[in-house]
Image 1 (tube, helix red, strand yellow):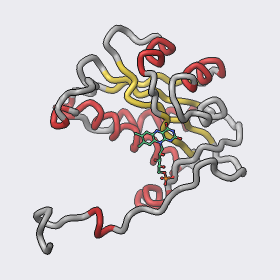
Image 2 (cartoon, rainbow, N blue to C red; image 1 turned 90 degrees about the vertical axis):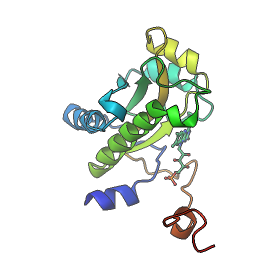
Image 3 (cartoon, protein in one colour; image 1 turned 135 degrees about the vertical axis):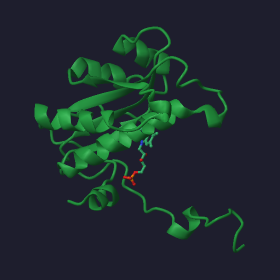
Amino acid sequence: MTPYDAIVSKRDTRNFDGRQIPEDVLRRILQAGRMAGSAKALEPVQFVVVREQGQKEALAACGNFTPHLPPAAAVVALVLEPEMGVVGAPLTHFRGPFDAGRVAQNMMVAAWAEGVASCPASMHQGEEAAKALGLPEGYVVANTIAFGYPGETEETRPSRPRKPLDEYVHWERWDAGA
Ligand SMILES: Cc1cc2nc3c(=O)[nH]c(=O)nc-3n(C[C@H](O)[C@H](O)[C@H](O)COP(=O)(O)O)c2cc1C
């Protein structure tokens, strides 16, 4: 699979077949996340890898759309250092969440290139999620990602087609050609 093929064929998958992810594959996924660049090279994102059933269920209880967490082979929580994920900060100061997004996509694309599917799961009860993971004071969960080999049952939430490219892209200026 070329990098482009991996990127455009990757869909968020919530059904997993129960197989474990071999340690070397999992480590490559984590390594792909670690290699994402970050603003000022601050590397503000760390990972908590959750494979124990009780821990996966504890995380699932912290989000509103999380039925895919308990059946996943591994859930990776992306954790931001204090001050990097502050809610209410101006959008231009949102380096931490942007950095976490880069990490997340690197991991998910690298995983998919090896046949491992994934889907993010937001932690709507962020403080509870931080507690479940035993995070130090001030650290926040940017998001979690469920990883596993895809199952055969139908998706609980089917993929939706993207908007046409012309609706995404503005050339030179927002209003050019309008
Ligand atoms: C920041 C973020 C948070 C998300 N949180 C959830 C979630 O809590 N539960 C869930 O089932 N999917 C979640 N998703 C997955 C989106 O629903 C998914 O990316 C979107 O439906 C597109 O899926 P597709 O690529 O398969 O078309 C999240 C995605 C992102 C980027």
